[in-house]
Image (cartoon, rainbow, N blue to C red; front, top):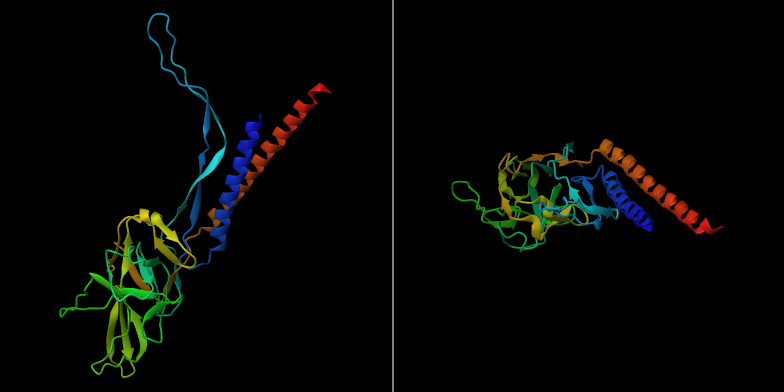
Length: 296
């Protein structure tokens, strides 16, 4: 009888964890680039009351018997992340951009050069939020001061050297002076161009995007950033390729992909599940009280 008490307690704990996930989703309904999460339950361990046996077809033998198992409630099996692209949020700021696809921006502390196929080894972070600006040294940074990585070296034919990533920075003129840029434009291919004070058009660089074999293997840290976990698979820094990694939309930020109606429905079912488990505890307690009082 006490087993029912423990099963109900496991149910309470799991439903509370699920409510924690739901509340976090709702709290971030207006957070740029937020990806909703789902709590997944699984059965807890089982005790075999009767083991499964095969039938004996010899003379006088018995047929097979199915196992009888007594469960011990429920556990939180996993928390999965929904990486589908959120809606477009128009900002009108040309230095805000989002990826309409599966790619990630590549950001991190200052490093002169990072191999495009060694992002994890060089402690690069990934982000879906493109709130960019140019700092006092001419580098493209996000709103937390992380440098934005991309391609800055072009060949004579205009193609980019994509073997290595560098922090994107406003280039210098023939005199070694950094160009004084008055306005910026980010193209769908991630190429950043600037217009100088004297109306000269300057190509600054191309924002790289990361392709992630298993986005579920990424680990989110505080803010917008993801670290590359061991189970993320191959993570490469590449050029935007349309439907493969998505296109970059300037003047927009990605909105949260939380479906508020779904979360409210999940909240109701989670509350009822929690309530039902408390009822099991109450009924079990009443049964134990009746057992104790049998001698009276």
